[in-house]
Image (cartoon, rainbow, N blue to C red):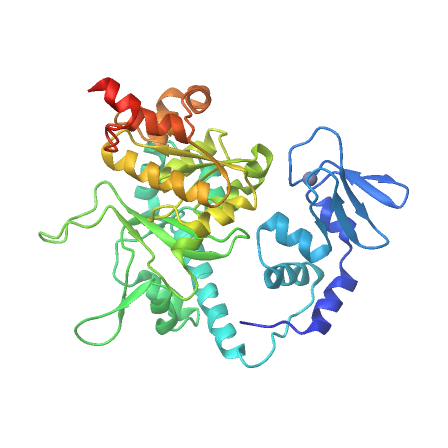
Length: 393
Ligand SMILES: [Zn+2]
């Protein structure tokens, strides 16, 4: 674990004003020595959240959350203590000298995050080049607006074996670092590396505070086949020292404010589902990138939401996945509902075809709690000994 010297923590505390920081998230009104406002952590109509500017503490009489500057950032950004110090130090322009012992490891991680950030920018910038035009066309066909593309940092990996590799090494990123974060692979024959993502639409996977951790790359609809080799529809960054997919949710960076407001998170399957719903104004939506929902992901959602709504396909695989998801959410102490999509539809196609209002209606009227879900799917789940199952046989 990296450590930040106590003296730096004190410097940050001295340099940053709690009222200032909270004001980025809450509209505060002065009341004597206190500032009060609507609590950012729970839904309320009358303010029970207050900041004591003399003691530099916040407290909510509604949800009982409280603490100091760092605690506030931990809660609102969904980060740990170290990241809260880093974020606030950044804001105050204080440089952090992380303590020795692991500084080598820390700087290697920094290099990896730097390489990922570079790659995200590189893929995004490709959209402005002639070879990126086919990606622009495809994004247009999918109904994604310019603003949405920017919000999610969607980009394009060119149809080439080494465009990223060349650009990144020219920018002083070592091929070994690029390899460690899954952007390039070592050639099997001969020396050197090659780009992993080629001719793909690129979805950067971000941490809640916006660090690029990895990518999902979707194949272009008209990608040339490589002989008999059929390329995968999606390539996702696999586990790396900075990307642990069981601990990350796609779209959380963009969705967290809306999730906090709704006290609810929608869980969908794909990148395009998240992006489409967000664009349609249904912003409290995330996806578990390429895994079944994990306990760590539920814990992460619990920082923002009380309820998780799972959207799933009507087929057997979908029902089984939803059942596992329901169990994971309940075990994590959050409330859970499941919503079945009409046959053959995914959230992306549904909202693009029928619009946001129809989707909201679906969410409201079709949600089932655990019991309702079990009853409806008893036969599929093999639960013929439930009363409902028997009645139907
Ligand atoms: Zn509160």
